[in-house]
Length: 100
Length: 320
Image (cartoon, rainbow over all chains, first blue to last red; front, side, top):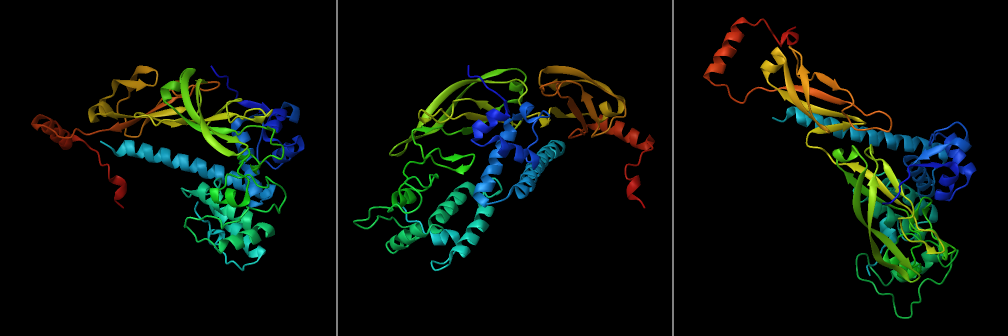
């Protein structure tokens, strides 16, 4: 059976994304991700956070955005995804209510 | 191979300056960026736009491309003219840009080797071909709600892109037995270390990410860890109260419905939602009073008797 893992510490994360620790700290300071733990040495990142950072890196390299803009954009993208999911769930519930 | 008209893709004219091309690229990249766009073929369009900009933003490549463009037209089959030796090497290196570009690009500008593909830092290649980490791969993993109740073993099959020094080779098919941990939620990712694309040379293999997609259930809707079930009841069950059998994910339970219940009333059944990392969610049973499709003579008499006696006006608020 293949083992799975679901959280990374700062060192793992940097290795995984091939970026420096100071770079990740900057992303946290901009509020793009909010890891668990108080101090960088105790930080834990889940895989969604890692994917969020990957998205931020893509937005920076592909669209030439700066971190402040990216922080807003990733927040809006998340909000849009949440609203879409909520809309879909409400439509589904409404359909159950209206069907015979 | 198909000829690509990069000017057409960016919507610019062949004599437009670099600034105009950059502006057109930025606009289209924003429109089609897969992270931002909701267009259905955004990724494909974004790759086209990136490829076009890669060529037209580089003076040497643009000159090279302009020469070739005299021989080809958009959408037509294209063969480089005799004696064409490919991109002469201007730019910053042999594997200058290792995106997942078209056959046309690879043939004209080289770079058949597509590197590690699209990594977290965008399209990146490898200057050190011999120690490149393999590509991370994400696949969607459909999971039934029932399968989240316990650790569940599943067999998955997937394909990995495979690159050799001469370019992209046939995909590798892989089969893996994986454990889907109890309590996974929709959209959550599970990382399988080293099960992604093979590394090059001494480079380690990439990782495989399984993105959990909860399969819609015929009865239950999911909201976070909570489930909701629409429970049809008769008008007399709503009026008099009843004890009814209700399905949950983990088997049936008996539920007490109070007298004078309404459509839309939510009853909470604690702990019968999806399992969580800490505590399980709850099941919300939403009542839906349903009329019989047809009333027989006897039932009609009962309704008539009720109609004659009941003091109830549901349209009270409509009268102003």
